[in-house]
Image 1 (cartoon, rainbow, N blue to C red):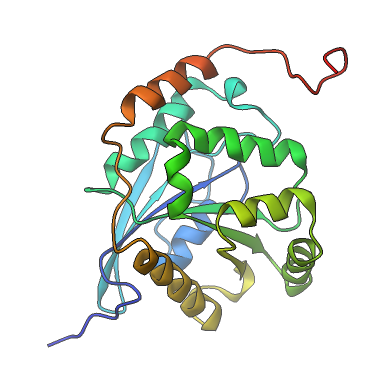
Image 2 (spheres, helix red, strand yellow):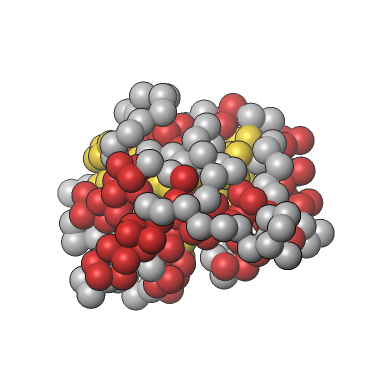
Length: 227
């Protein structure tokens, strides 16, 4: 009889992030094969695979424009972000927020992450982990240094996720120690949450409210003329 590895036992993961952040590549790394087509999508894509004797469900969501506020994101993309929860019955264990390490993660991009995750309510953060993707180790070290030196935007995001983050070198491909370590960190998060799943029960009115608000543009209080 095959024994399931506790680090991958029936794990349900949703990938969130901006366009070109590397979400689909992260999904392929998690499933240890090319399951997701590397292209921008407008609807969610769900794949299931067996990894180390356990079943892993990965849902890739449409990415938002990294510099856009939530009200500037197409309504279809926002609805798909909310719908991603229902594609991992009874609900996802983990949301991986994927950030491209070489990009400048500034305040505008931080705010975009915060506003798009608000579509799922404040409660989603207890299930979140940040994955910084890069194509070489200098990129990996660059993001590590930003976080450790207290770069305001990346530090806010890491602290919002209770310091749960991982740097993933995409050039290394599937497998390897860095992927094993990522699964260990994810399993630690699942254990911290007592193996509970994120559910939308009781949150639909909140999400509907956010979707309605996000449909309309509003003045930016930090923009010139509003200070």
